[in-house]
Image (tube, rainbow, N blue to C red; front, side, top):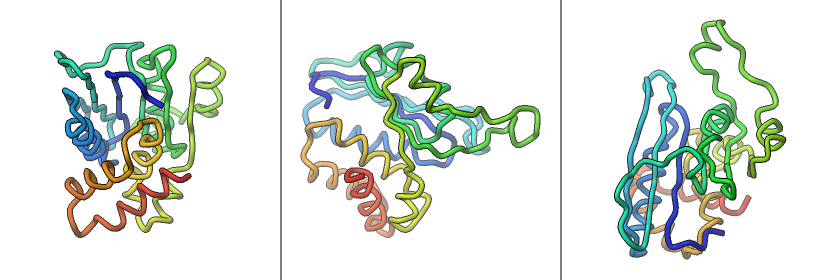
Length: 194
């Protein structure tokens, strides 16, 4: 449970997974709760499945920079296992990695010049990281679409905050297009209750 008046969150994944939508929902909740919030998106070849990072920094006082330094993230919310490993060095000593166990092959694996690493979650835990790993993809499919992994992960993330569930649901309603709202509500609920 996050109890601080400030925090740093990194949302990481690959292009097309909905990391930016997740950061917008989280930013909306934080703003409506009286925090100063800064969001920043950094990506490389996101249209081709490249790495995408969104920083969410919030404070009851002023946030001057949107960027999270190495060792400064209270939470790394990872949409894919390899991305959790790629950004593990950003996790604060008392921070947590919340990650989907799904594996999405990056371009070097697709072209055959590299292999997808084995035992990523196990290796992160052995290295001393606090890792909450679960199969968000299967829950998204249960909600009705594999494209809802982001809302499943957001549901899981919501358990670390003291915000009322209704606040999360309101932010989802204000951010998600109406035709996708019901399926995203289901995905959020499944992630929160998993």
